[in-house]
Every structure is written in structure tokens, then in C-alpha cells.
Image (cartoon, rainbow, N blue to C red; front, top):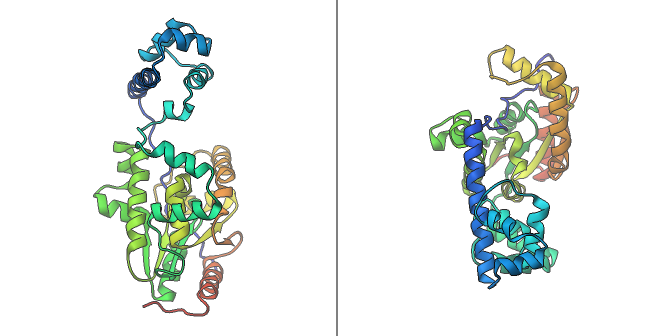
Length: 315
């Protein structure tokens, strides 16, 4: 059979910010960093002189740091944090942590694995073991893995609902994924992705979900996916990912951003290598290499039926 596995390309990278935008963001970060250092020093009733003596840094450097001036060395900032008895990550966090976060963090460091698992379940809103529907399958993998193509076939065979997570995000926000990235950036997209996934996890009825390739990059979102869906990694060789996306682009089905062959292959290999340990957390893996749609769809259907104990039809 000549049909090939392919899918829309995932939008994983935001457009590059302009130099002026990047400069403004960095200046804002240095200002916030300086305010945090000054506040933490004041809370601990430390003068600049005492902090200078404790950290081994000059009072002038500390004054510049608190004033949000100049570039900051991570090594010197670490010395400031140690001298004040705070964590480096608390100084450089992108957003302010809730007041109870230090307590929660300390408790997590000494918690048992089962306590951590239960805390994750509660915070993510996932169903407790034995609760909620089990007839939910999510497909993960790089672009070109066949998540949309195979997901539709599986849903049709099982009599389930098929959902593409990116299309759900677009429907909820009235913008394309590319527009969300261009206007609001990757951080906003990942927040919208998590919200859409949470609502889908709460939606009743059996479902096949095709996800974006970068969903594994956000730990909370990926953990919610793993806890709410029977997750299958559709695996292929980098060369096949490239071939499938280009084949789709040639047919006008996608607008794939692919550089020349050598650069594209290096890029795909690097992304796949970094994500493989995360994709491998899926409950099952199907290697689509050298298989056509019909063969892989049959294997995927058999896998899901086996997982469900032979029950094919959803309510």
C-alpha cells in the first residue's frame, strides 16, 4: 500500500523577538532581580556592608545589583544568595512564588514517592486511581509521526471522538497556533495548551487525542496527559519525520518550515534526542518506521483493544 504516515507540523518554536524587545525584557528582569535582592536583604536586617563582608563582594557591586544595573554574573549572584541564606532560584524566578511555596518545597524534599504522586494528582486535577474513564488515548511524538492521521483512523474504528489539541486551542481562542506564538509568545501558548488539556481531561466520553510534539516540554502539562490518558508514543527515524512533513507540504496540506536537508536532519535529530527520554514515559510505544498507514493503524488498534481488555466500543 502506497499511503504514507504524515501530520500537520507542530508549532514548537516562537518567532524570534526583536533586539529592542529582548533588551527591554532583560532590563525589566534586572530591575526585578535587584528589587528581590534588596527586599531579601532588608527582611534579614542585613546592611550592604554586612552582605558585602559575608559574600566577599564589594558594596558597589551590591548597590549596582540592587539598582538593576549592568550584566549579572550567575556565579557572583550565587554568592549573594548563599550569603543571605536564600535559594538562587528564588532570586531569578520569572514569576513571584506564592507565600506558601517555601513550605511546600521543603515538605516535598522529604516526602515519600507515594506522597509526591498523590500531591501531583491533587494539584493536576487528575482522577484518582480507579476513577474516571479509561477509554482515553493520547498520541505523542514529533511532527510527521502520524498522530492526526492515525488518531482519526483509531477513533473511527473505536467509535470514539477524535480531538487535535492544537485545533482545540485555536477554537477556544479564535486564533491560529502560529498567531498565538507570534502575538503572545511561547509561554502563553503553553498556558493555553495546559488549560485546553485540562478541560479535555474532564470531558466525559471516550476520546483519541493528537497532541503537539512539544507538549512534553512543559512538565505539569505532560504529567496531566500521562495521568489522564493512555499515552502512546509514535516513534520514527528522523529521516522519516522529515520525509513525511515534506510530502504533506508538497500536497499543500501543511505549511512546513523546513531548512535544507542537512540542517533539517541535524535539527530533527537534536530535538528527538532531547525529547526521547520524555516520550519514553508513554505507556506504550509504536515504531512506525518502514510501515505504512494501514499497518501502523492495525497495530495501534490492536494495542488499544488489548489495553481495554477487548472492549472496542465506547459509551
